[in-house]
Length: 96
Image (tube, rainbow, N blue to C red; front, side, top):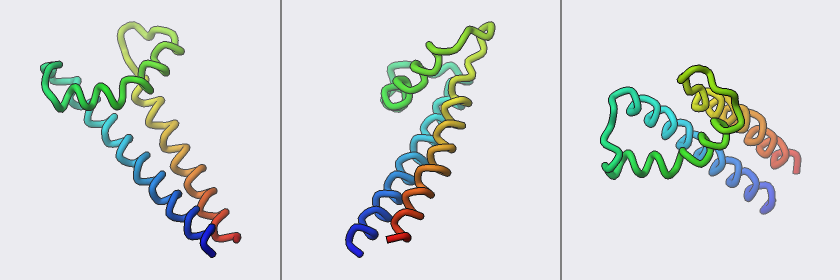
């Protein structure tokens, strides 16, 4: 019973963290359309949280003529993790 509740709580926290990360990527993408000041605290926060993952995807893809689709690919991957991993953990916890 204790392990089951622990796994359910972990799945909930993982789902929350991934949801917040999705929103941070969306906010960063929207802000990038308006030529933001890179020295503002909000932009630096968003950049420091999202850039490691986005640059990993960006560097592993061929150039598409100036169009950056790395946020879309990262969003799809995070949604897959939310759907697959969180649901699998929840099902595993209910099995015990």
